[in-house]
Length: 399
Ligand code: NAP
Ligand code: MG
Image (cartoon, rainbow, N blue to C red):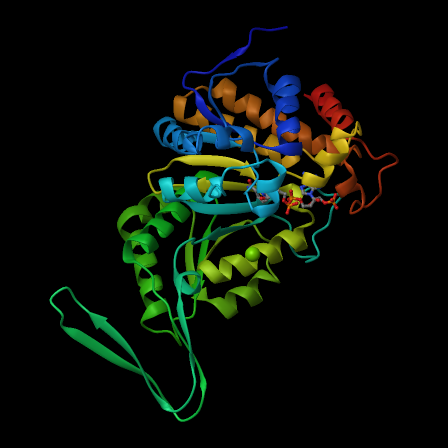
């Protein structure tokens, strides 16, 4: 066995729950540790340890990601009352992803992993379409009201000195509904920054779409701030990398996406991103073939799989079954983090290892070795459905 690949700086490693925790250990043991002198700062975000530490471990982990610049995270249980009973929790802990997102002020990017045996529902898509979703404000922080009968509805802004500015929303002649929404300039700028950083990193052109013909002030502000960040901070770097920035109306963007070959970043406002990321994920194949990365405006990267802890598979594993759970998105979380670490540290061997492992996973599937979720979508269908252990063994051989 040749010498192991050296890492200069550690990455923050956030372990998680249930079936993904089992796969996490297997991926490290079978694919990474034999080749890499792995350096991580390890945080156990499993539900028992979050309970034992009063969730302090999640905050410590978020700080470590910010300090080290790179993190990799396993899926974790978000507690609800059923989980509280199951794990005898003293209280409901906040979602770890929400805690980390808040600490890093990040934007989430979701990218499907394409393999030729699984054809997207949209026949023109050849390259992945990546969604960058703004995760603050709009209808997710709205105030809503039922209007019971005739009367006027106004927007009122009162500054700290008590001066007021008003806009008429509607002179209602009959019962109806009203909603007030907001966003913040800095949040929009940080969203734009995260999108341009991600696009430069992944060498993707950038689209941003809103509805500024109708919402001239609100969506117009989004359009203007995106343009400002592009012109002042990123245009030169994008030009050098040969990447274009393109603004269009959201309905025009949707029409173009359906005829496009893909291979771009689609920056979406909060609601558009919610809807469009499910559309892309479903049309691209499987949740188990979707990667997710949180990028902060300071250029901190946290990699994970888009799926959850695959709870039902875990219960079957506990009864002794070797489940056919797809580890590909978790492998991609590791390869994304290791490649980024290598890039930042200037250690090309680590980058090369990460790319080789990523490619080995893909060619394993291309050659017809896959787990059950993919076997059902694959054309041609594989002769045999592999369990997770068999699949990882095939990837290891390929590697
Ligand atoms: P899930 O774990 O994503 O699983 C939903 C279903 O999708 C599974 O039952 C399975 O379908 C299929 N699936 C997902 N990943 C798969 C994989 N790698 N291989 C094969 N099939 C896969 O979602 P959930 O059951 O709604 O949530 C379970 C737990 O995960 C919850 O406690 C939730 O809080 C947590 N969660 C965490 C994150 C995160 O940490 N980022 C995200 C989402 C959910 P079949 O059963 O049909 O095989
Ligand atoms: Mg949604």
